[in-house]
Image (cartoon, rainbow, N blue to C red; front, side, top):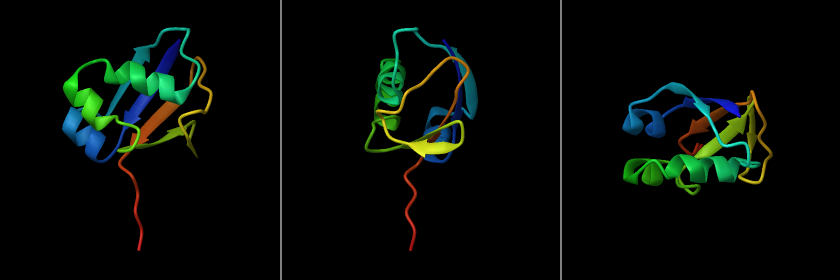
Length: 84
């Protein structure tokens, strides 16, 4: 399954990556599973993509880790946003 990933804020800065296209395993069904798969890349990925450290959007809509993913989706990974 082909997924376009965009990295914004701290995740992008620390991973030194703004975007990439990945060929994710077809058995991944949710955003949480995709993040877990990406975290398996190593320690810096595990730290930067921990679910309590990022917010994500699928096709420009914020969602939680149980959201479904499919071939061709665009997934954006952000630093948590706080407002005041």
